[in-house]
Image (tube, rainbow, N blue to C red; front, side, top):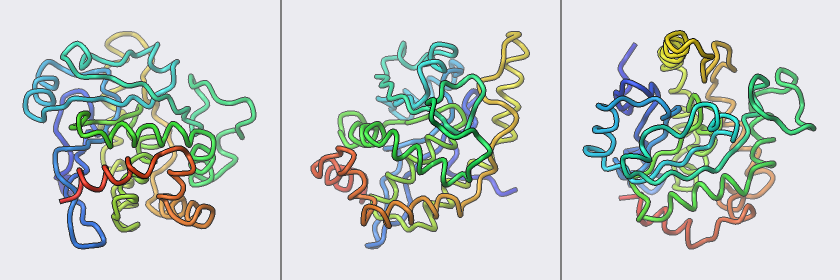
Length: 252
């Protein structure tokens, strides 16, 4: 398998990636080293911390995990290294185990992935807008946002961000699908840590398969309902000034 050049090689997180470099519709590109996406940063080595803080210059973490996940696994050691941590919990409705879910959420397995994601976008729209508001503040950059596997909640945030910056749907969907390349390694790392500590793993061995077309369907459905991804985000409370700041700061 071809090595993913966007992946930042770390000992803890297996899915820590730079969103920089993607082309926009007007022929420009996203600035590298400004916004990262990741799986859980709860388990980072001393070398990991040195790399992301000293070399990448990371200033901000946005943790998308539920309160239960944070209570169980913690925010990780980056806060002690001077990195600001924001907690904007978005419940992962894909999972039923160990994750608090709304009482009226359909059981996992009864909906397609894109239907589940659209439900999350409807239910937690203000939280998604809040994540992009944090990213839009240049004082917070470089910033990383993450959930447990860096797949579902993180994948939705990345898709919204890339889309509002003018990245083509095909590229957005391909970025989402990149996580599939890292799932085997990610699960193995979580299993090994859990076995060593005689605890359960933060990321289980079963998960929805990652299909780029699912994210395409999500973006198309949002446009059908709101007109554009920007209009969806504004409807969720993201002010136009923040959208302008995202474009000004993250596109070169």
